[in-house]
Amino acid sequence: CLGCWAQLRSVDAAAQGCMLCARCVQVCPVSALQLSSDGTGTSLSYVPDRCLRCGTCVEQCPAGLLELVEPDADDPVPV
Image (tube, rainbow, N blue to C red; front, side):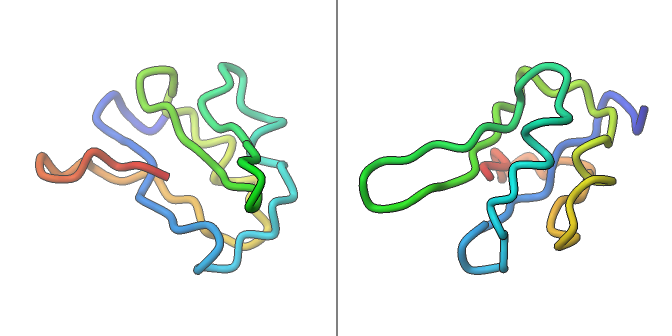
């Protein structure tokens, strides 16, 4: 566990090279990460209230886009 204070760093999945492989989604034990489609494309979303901060998604991301960091009070940390 990486600590109760940790949250995922904000990620613009499309702009930063997310392959939408869904590895992070598949390994998350509480479905804090989800893939969704809106007709214009697929995106990765993050539900911070569900996150256990276990770091499993970070370890499984082949692009290295996910990172647990101390949250900034001014940033709600959307993914």
